[in-house]
Length: 223
Image (cartoon, rainbow, N blue to C red; front, side):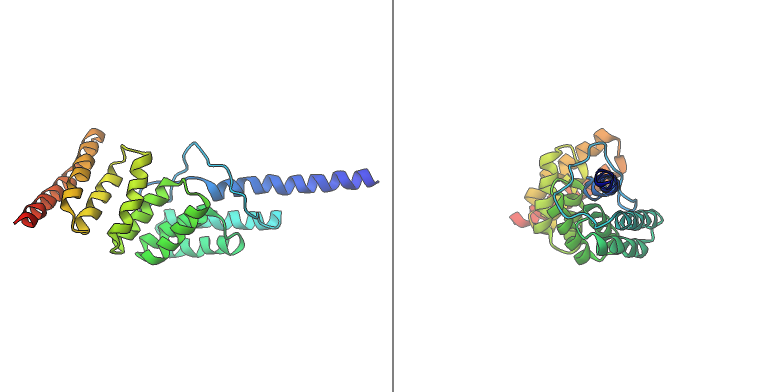
């Protein structure tokens, strides 16, 4: 009888662990995508952080449902609804990096940059290798009139991915906003060249206009 009870306990524990694994992976996936769309999941997943999981299988399922609801609302451009759903998940499991990251994206879409930055900060404490969190935190900092702080995030992305056109563009824009057109021009030229390679000629045209602005500002600063 004692062995039967022990076997039953192990089965229950194993069931809870199996339910917890998807949630933990969900909380630590490195995610990304284009603004305006719930972020896609790449093929490589970071290992789960060592934090406290939800207390029960029922709680794990509840968190997962709230996260899925947030994703659905985000995909429908219901950003306020997405914030509410991710907040429900985080009320139960506050170390869910995925929910923090995507709530930050929803806040960014609502132009609540302070809240977005705060969530990106927490997400990156759990998963510091999420380059999309660095990218979009940088964009949020830039939009919140903090170009100097934004440069650090864009540099982090470029360090890991030297072919990231948007990171070069936004870092160039940040240098320009900071009053340093000389530093802006090389970044903008790199972005323009990368966009041309990718066949994104509209974006290339936009960056070429920024280069003209930076060149004009640089010329004026020499007078």
